[in-house]
Length: 194
Image (tube, rainbow, N blue to C red):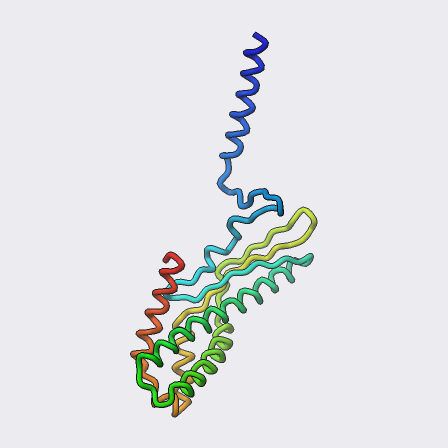
């Protein structure tokens, strides 16, 4: 009888520990030798670009909540500018290769410089789509943020700049550029699972 009680107690402990392990889907980390492994950050999912918006997310830590949020916003803006520049570089390369541009190297250089300027300008039009914060046991704050900017804002900024440059206007085919730009946005969305 003593063996049955011991067996029963052992089975109950296994069952209870198994149930508590399956209880919560909110768990966002797992233990490892190097610390907690974070599986999903707040705002990360909302910070993924699709065919209509360039998006970025970031996280930062500080002993001051406001500073943690500001640093996260700055990091997200930097990532967004990098994403925009990368995407428009691909568009520009394809555009130059598919069209006969009088001086392709000069066009490409001017267009890339203009794109960087427009990307920096466009950052002023960002929309914060997710913002969260947490505090650790040792009193540090984590700031999480996701931001977006419409691809239309970027295209409109490029077209405005092109209309002010006579040399670029000669080699610019709005319809062809937009077609390539949309293909690149579609490709980016597919790569991110949208």
